Length: 140
Length: 35
Image (cartoon, rainbow over all chains, first blue to last red; front, side, top):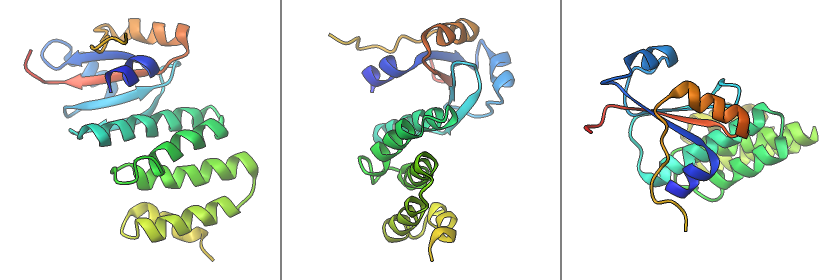
């Protein structure tokens, strides 16, 4: 976890006790909250509330995928999303990651079969998740 | 050997400047944990 954060991010920490203005600046109203900002300072992902280590790592990888997606690096975005979808399938972020993996694959290839495959996977693996419901429109 | 501590910065704008220079994203952690 520590090595992952140091390798992939510029980590910054603010404390409510002495940097309340920074909380207001970024709209943080609860702790712990983590925000992933791209190098231009734009928010790409937000994590609110405590998570166990495995779920937290999944959220960081999900956020890195969103950063790549925002940059239209769809191949790298899909790789990050699949790392969560397939590599951490029991984490809370996995259904969202599976959804976005399908979207990234579609955006990178223009082939809608990737959306259908994501929809089928979500329906089978996470039928109660909102991501399965969002992907249901891709099923025929 | 990898560092065993997270190299937290306390200055957000300095972190954003470092992010622009390095191309890495910022992980901004909002905490209320006791010191």
